[in-house]
Image (cartoon, rainbow, N blue to C red):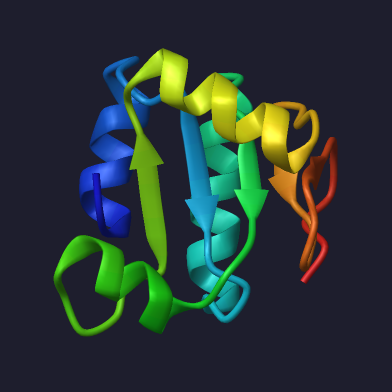
Length: 101
């Protein structure tokens, strides 16, 4: 999934196994994604930039990407380090609790 709305739909329907949020995402986007993912215990990692995400998705710029393939999500988490469901911290895995922006 690419884009915040598509990703949020996949989180709400239980399809998303991992959410990636670009480090240059806006504060409102980060808070909205963090709230939904935290409520549904979906891991979030803040990494990369919107331009790179856009290239991956075949678009100009994308702030949020949802990973729905559980095996791929697990492999990414393994490479990036363990993430806990909750709120993304700048340039790292997420933590629990407050938004760190």
